[in-house]
Length: 519
Image (cartoon, rainbow, N blue to C red; front, side):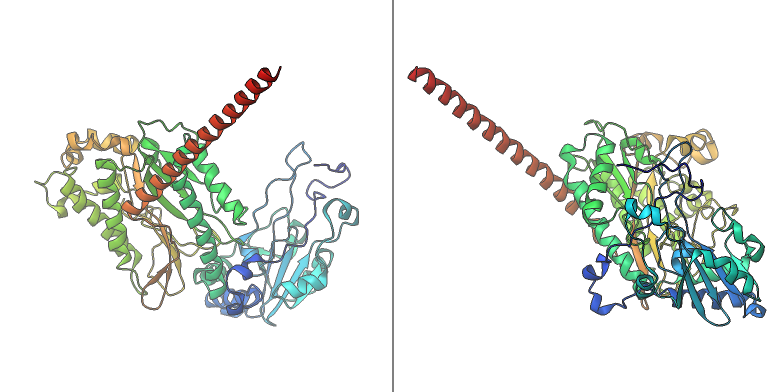
């Protein structure tokens, strides 16, 4: 790939310029006759401003200004860093063009998008940028201008202008802006909390891509001899489906590595002695996330211990899902998951039966086997805004719970219980007689090799319950069937390949002998 010299270009403005985004395939894939033609940016701005006024009703004439991300060069290099669009900017524009800005005049309900100024010299390198008319047709805004007009417009505005923060992309306008205001973020976060039909459709499509990716990974275990291969298989299918970006770094682990919650090394070998696989990965679509975790046996056959833990986690998810509806407090649903874990461990003998379920629950020891929250909000961010977590909560059951409020229709969240056998988390517990007394160490020792199991689905809260966006099966028998089918297919291909090679060799030998005979 060739690049023209960038020496004359300011460091904060790489010459690589945006291209006109390709037509949104999304509408062809998601029954466009049921959808509006534009991302509803104007309605999003209105909703955010209305929530903002809940905290500052006297600011009814004020405005929002947000700068999107822009290209930035790596130090001492002419290559640009990967861009991830500012999610607050995207929420009130639907625009992914680097170097853009947005201004929402709340008093007059006017939304203005500012495109980056045209770099004529860059057109031969990157093609024509989107025009003002094309942007007006594509985006749900009232007016489209260019970046050189921002300063004058902000200076002419008579009321307060709120922004997320002053950074390298808006520092030239710093004197006009109020940054990091609580009411401003409250407005944006509360608006983003509830997804509209358009957003849910985007997330539904992201989830469908993710289903195919997880199925592809389960079907290809014959060639997955390293955790990197699992990562590669997922990315391959995502790219094939048009998803160029992942919602987060995929977690692809095997055996004891599955006990690390956010394991991203993804490079260990997978020998026969490792039986368990955990993959937590989600494709992104038009800045909206999916987040799905599945576990499976690498050879299709569940070991007794792996299946015991898998069934325990599956029951945790099934019971908590049955509690999900508008008005339910997520804290209560999360705590119910801990109760199920304790019940299952008593059945398996990991917890000693001479202790009551209530006593074990009050000891908080299950938090060392299930240390994270049951789930989190999902949207443009994997851990989306609006959850009101309290990481200072002294209760180990609740400290890492990212959602601490009642469920509402239109929320999208994950339900992702897990059980882990982490030497790091259990080391001090096993040395503490007051805690260790609940655990049968001989039984526990049988489970270390499993590492961990997590099952995660993406749910939309509906009027009476929820819709599960995740379609890839979590049934252990069906998972085993998918894995074995992939293995058998690979064996057939190998046999066919061997027969083809044998036939080719036979033809070659026969031809050689025939030519020798002719001579």
